Image 1 (cartoon, rainbow, N blue to C red):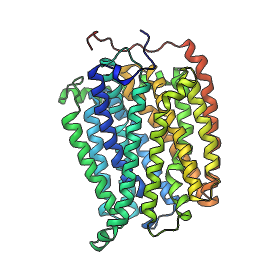
Image 2: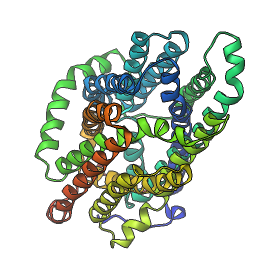
Image 3: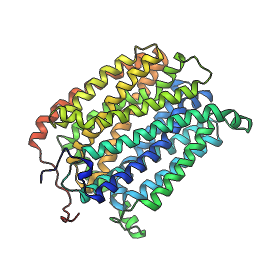
Image 4: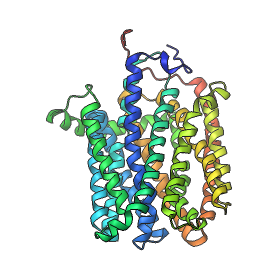
Length: 439
């Protein structure tokens, strides 16, 4: 059955529209809590006396932990269900924040980042897989680019608003927290903790998943099946002429953009002359994340510009983002930096929907969580390599030099994607579960 690629949201069945809205709220809250934390993360670590290479190692701990657990836990989500595994990720993230709040040493900070990595591994391939699968059951005649763009827009908006809130908390409540024995940046940590609890309650009471029975037998069976699920999914990804290219590109892009995400605040802060620098950073962070949302909103028109050929649109956007990445490394004025940053992140945000739509078109349902986890593993591995290598370059030769190298890597990843259109013309889309017409 040929799916509608371009359609109006109101044309979806009512149940599908409700499902999309529910997931948008979920993503807004979940990523909002992360935004509160991300805006102060590097500044908090620098306040505790860690240099750029120390921070790069901490991010390496996060990536390494994610790498170790990602595939087994993605396989577990395919076995026992997406919801329980995601709920476990929330507990890991809450534990990570609590450690940061009450312990200051480098070793405990590394432990916190390892828990953060475990939470990331638990998150991967869970609710996004649930979102796609339920949507396909509710609206089997419709494609996924528009609804993926909607969810990515919601998550980017959550990040943006969370970032503004985190900067505000640090500047306006930090002094009060210091007076009570905490750090300047502990106020946003408490804010992220509170949002995490809200996301936990949201998932427990509002997310429904009836596909996987949860009992001791199913959990044991889920763990037992993990090695076989991973093996089959790995072989599928490596052998598949489209999935393998997407994964290679993801790895290269992550090498560069981990360095952007980690170092843009210390790169920009020296340009800011204000006693409310953290609030200003929060505002810029909000713009940083909202520009992803802006890009996600334009994903569908960009694909339409290429006559519905998602692969060509994706390759164009990746190469363009690599060129702009090199450009941002040359900025010396905060306002020019912000403008270029908006453009860069908009191009990155627009990549999400076409890239994920291609990925989901060629992934079977019984391997979806595991392959999403494998995608994340490749991203984390690329990020780990990028953080250690570009982190060393940033500390030794400057952040601008590290970013120039990153931009070249992104351009190479975009060039790789140009093999996809020809391959997609000869590769059939994977058939998914059949549903009754009334769905």
